[in-house]
Each structure stands twice: as structure tokens, then as C-alpha cells.
Length: 243
Ligand code: C5P
Picture 1 (tube, rainbow, N blue to C red):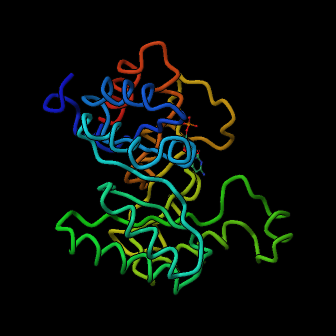
Picture 2 (picture 1 turned 90 degrees about the horizontal axis):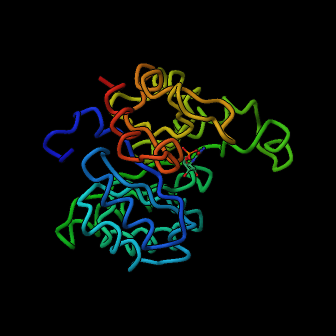
């Protein structure tokens, strides 16, 4: 399948290339270029392979990049990290909402200013609210008020007010966040499992079509594609399920 023939709905799919190796990521990206909408590279890959590794994977695939580095530091440092990331041309970049309003504003301003200075598209900033690995007891232990869903909503609203473009959220959070957040706020959603794929360590999953029906804009999908016997066929099947 070529980019011209893939289902437009497949553009919603960002395949998570969770590997520390450039060759493996590059090979998968090349194979999947015609059947997904983008690539997600995160900390595991970035710490191992750095900016050169990112360029090596993205330059040939010609797909939008979701660079999931989850920045969380003082405003000045996060602004600098965002500026350093802009030349990699990410379509999406993540920051932790719990870094606070000033940090979020600094990140949003830095993305806009650096993109304009370099004459490249502005990356959209996405906030991570409460990590899905944290439960009510974990929040209480770090002094955050629960329940978890209230903290997620509170942080998501803060990010929207601070000029952040969207959030990463679990499938169960999509519908409640959609109701509370402004139109156009982007929801990027991992924890997706087609009915025919193993859940693995993901606990609260939705199928791709269910997540989109709930209001997800983009789906982050890793192992159902990358661990399939035929990743291209798996991605194509998910794209077809999306309509
Ligand atoms: O293989 P799988 O589809 O579970 O991969 C999901 C991707 O989304 C992984 O890169 C994982 O780190 C990421 N992710 C997640 N849950 C979150 C945030 C990110 O699964 N809450």
C-alpha cells in the first residue's frame, strides 16, 4: 500500500516504535510508511540513539513524528529543551502538565518562537496528565488530590488554559475530557487493542473504532502492529476497521 492508497483514517494511527535500535526502528518505519499516519518515538529510543537516531528513522519514512519525551523541569529548562527539539520537526511533543502553568506557557511560547525562527511547522504540544501507572494511593503519596479522574480533568483544563494543544490520555478518559475541554483540543490515545490482538500489560483498553467513537483524534498503537507476524497487514487491518 502506498501513502496515496491508504485509508485516510489510517492517518490517525501513530505506531509506537519501542526499541532502542536505529536499524530495527528504521526498517519498521519504512515498511509501515504506507499504512500508518505517523511514528511515535519515546525516551527509550531517544536516550539510546539521540537526535541523529530520530533523523535516521524519520527522514526516509516521510511520516509525522510524535516525539514523546515528557519534559518536566523549570520553565527556562523546558523552553530550552523544546527549542532543541524543534529542528527534529516533531508534529507532536509531550510535556508533563504537573510542571505547572508557567512551565506549560514557556513550552508553548518556545515551540511557536523557535518554529517561526527556523521557518518550520510549529509542533503541537501535548500534556501528560496523570500517568496511567498511578492509582489513587500513588497520588495521595505524592500529595496530589484525587480521585484520579478529577486530577486528570484538572490538569487537562490547566493545560488548555496555558496554550497547550492537547493531551495524551487513556481510552476511558477520552469521553469525559471531550465534554470538558474546548473544541479542537487534541486527544492522543494509547491503550488501544483491536479485538483480535492480545492486551498484554495494558489493562483498560478500547478497540481503535471505540476510541475514535469516544472522541480520540489519534491512536498510539505499538505491539498489535509491531509484534504482529505481518506488521503491514496488522496496520492495514486496523486502518480498515476505522472506516
Ligand atoms: O504496545 P502498546 O500498544 O501497548 O504501546 C503503547 C505505547 O503508548 C507505548 O509506547 C507506551 O509507552 C505508550 N503509552 C501507554 N500508556 C500511557 C502513555 C503512553 O501505553 N498512558
